[in-house]
Image (cartoon, rainbow, N blue to C red; front, side, top):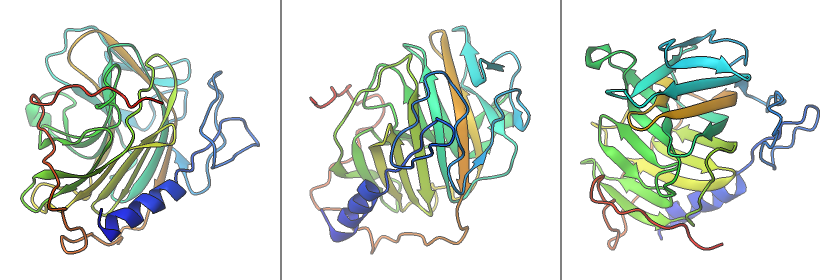
Length: 280
């Protein structure tokens, strides 16, 4: 493992701070665990971008999205022909940190779409771009970095990846692969700085990606949530907190992120086989 990647790992391990839900007890070193769904105290530097009452500030199909039990709730009946999104209208994201609680039904498939591009020419509520996947029942997809209608799987969950200048992702290291039960609340965290992407679930790192592909990558775009084609599903989001970071954060270069000579390619979608979680 080269020195840059190792330093990123150490920085990531030191920065896995999340928040807790009980009002008046904000502690960034512990995950949110309010099973009653009470509103969390806002972490320092963040803004709440979902009010828990209605869809003010969000735009999507009323047939698919609503507020239920104080949660941003998406439902699909199994007849969707393509993936649909609800989009936050508070502005475009560049460098940011997103902290959010997520609950998906067994068999469900959703995602946190960021730096996305709206494509009405492809259908109603279509957004392309980066996505932190929310996938029940497949540990190596839950929390991975996917590019909707683009380069597709950029990093499976458990992979530390460098995407080369031609758009090929390479596995430069690995994290322990954990499973997170569907039908329960989990804390998702997305941190994007320049061309460096990091995801966590319940404080555990799921991907760490450096995107050197100038042609394929996006440095700015919209935030959205997904309902996926396939079986009937329900996805719920609450405590949606966003922190905007400086717009001029540095871009990591190929010289700063050399790909190890023995790094394997990220296995493309359709050729990858499900991985079992590592034993506890």
